[in-house]
Image (cartoon, rainbow, N blue to C red; front, side, top):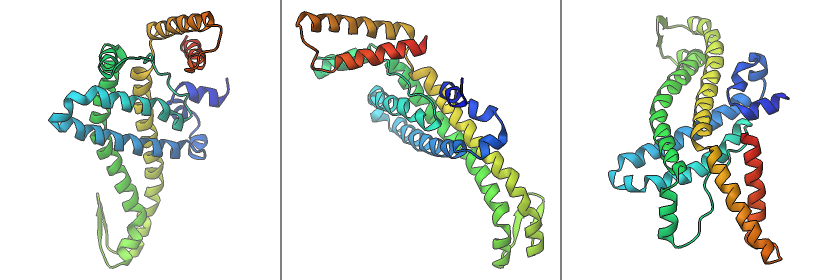
Amino acid sequence: MTSDDAFRLSPWRMLSGSPLRFLFSSDPWRAVAYTIISLALGWTVFMAYVVIVLLPFAPAWSILLGRIERQRVRMLRMAAIADPHPAVTGSFGARARARLAEPVTWREVVYSLALAAFAPLATLGLLIACVLTGGFAAAPLVVAAGGQMSIGPWQLETPQEAWRVVPVALPLFILTLYLFGAAAAIVASIAAGLLGPREEELAAQVATCGRREERSSDRSRPSADGSSAICTTVRSSTSSVR
């Protein structure tokens, strides 16, 4: 198994290897970008839950969020998460009832709740880490501009005092990158656990695909709705899950 294959299996792999490999790769910046988008989505969902009149629509926006999140894990070099939702047809009401009866819909609601709860806590922790790192790095500039700084036990009044604390910014910067990596791995792990298909869901999709292919063969012509490609994807997902 190559390192890329390992990363595709678990978002934690990027944090468990060599620190030098992590720091001098694209992984920290992938994690930063993934986490920032996660926080933006989390705050959006948080505000949607605060607005009481939107609560009845939680399954709808959770399904949309699930579609986004299944693809977004590719930012961390993970494989996209297979969609457990079967294809549904009929009127809008029939499709809505079918979606509400699917267990994955309510796992998506749980995921949206988890992301909404995670966003404020992660924002606070990462903001503190970024402010501390920036404060130590920018100390000489602040003091040179005629200001004074107080960072924990340090009272910085002269440029010489400010320059002495600058090296502290480096380990803080590394720690901050790892914090972003951990935040990204937490979100991606929750997404993989809640949004991915269960064995019974994949089995049902395979059975549905089999019936569609039988009907298509009875008509002696390929299906025009792309069901063959969908069935191939479903079977591939089944193999990867097993």
